Image (cartoon, rainbow, N blue to C red):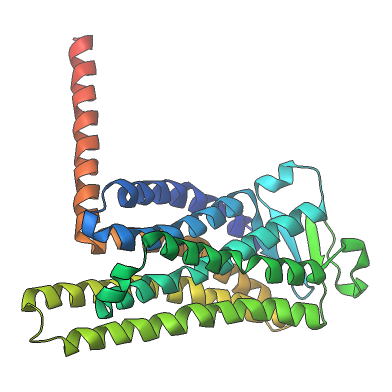
Amino acid sequence: MPLSVDELYNRVLDGSAIVHLPVKFFVIYIVLFHTPKQMRNLSLYLLNGMMWNFAANVVFVFMHLNPIFPSECFRADGLINYLPDNDILGQILMGLLMFLILNCSLAVGPIFHYRYVAFAFPNLVALIKPVWVYVFSVSLHLVTVPPFAFLYSQWVLPYSSYPIKEELPAGPSVFCFKPYGWEKYVTVGLMFTAEFVAVVPAFVSAVLLLRSIEKKKGLMHKSSLEKHRRTQLTLMLIGSIPIFIGGVPLLIAVMLTLAPHLPYAREICMVAIVLITNHGSVYAVALVLAMKPYRKAARHLFLKLMNRQKTETVFVIGYKK
């Protein structure tokens, strides 16, 4: 018997969780313990984005966000269904998920800002203590807490208070939001704004760095310039993954939340959510494959694991003999 849309959706998200959690653990381990000294500062920015994404994936494990359009409601599927039915819990997890995705988007930009400033203004960077860079990065994320918490708290709505009763979906684990009003448009608009604040300045910094590399021809050793250029192009390629596989589906999901009555809005939003859930694993794998130090470390660990399993197998066979 073929699976329904909801069953297929939940099985895909279950399978995604089985894959992406081990992948994230592995890549985070690689970046933490196998980053060369000269890449240490850059790795902190890479880890920042991966940790926000990993936290969002953990929430996705417990709650499969299922849009119930055309109403402004969602159903919380997944492990959360084993808990007592409570729309407040669904709203809290939804808010946490949106906050994590918001900060995951904001984590993309500093990677390129750091690269540009470190290359173009090395004397200025030398005067700044690393601790202030970390304070600035943390502040960038913390500053989003008050406005997001306020706006989200204004948008949520008790299930029993949903104004359009003929659209109100039945069933357990359903939680709703105000289907119209400034609270909806400003809160959802914040997600739009975060995407542009993350992507546009990051793109500008990336282009400025490539321009700075070109300007320093003849002033720096050719091999050093080529290394910087190659690293920057690699980062731009890797950075395009969260933008196109994560950011574009996020914008689509946000637009459909604004206009849930569009034809096939629910099905398209479900596909977008699946892409958002999985883009972090694609990004993590691409990061390891594209960056030589991480690629070598991953290969070494993989061969070490295979040799260990082979040794254990030989030992067991010899013991039985």
